[in-house]
Image (tube, rainbow, N blue to C red; front, side):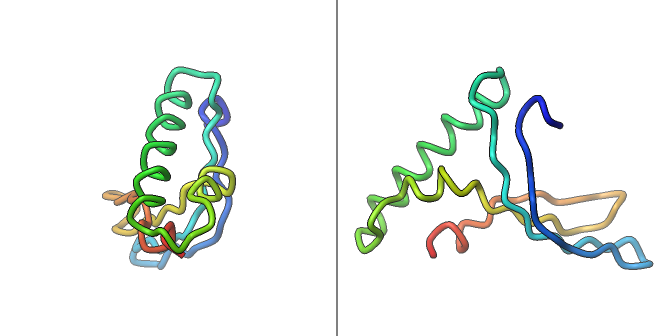
Length: 88
């Protein structure tokens, strides 16, 4: 959905319909949904910076995008923020 942002990454769809994707999503800050997502991303980045003082800047997450994983099946996908990747 280009009106809210972009996602890049890679993954697979098995013949059974099982999904395994790792993506990085960047949201457009000027649209309604994108603005809300960007605000949420900034809050999460700020919290990660507080809980991970060894990082030089939590804003690097904001600039590189939100890491997402998509699992489940094509008929029941599960999209989640990959918090472990955000801490790296």
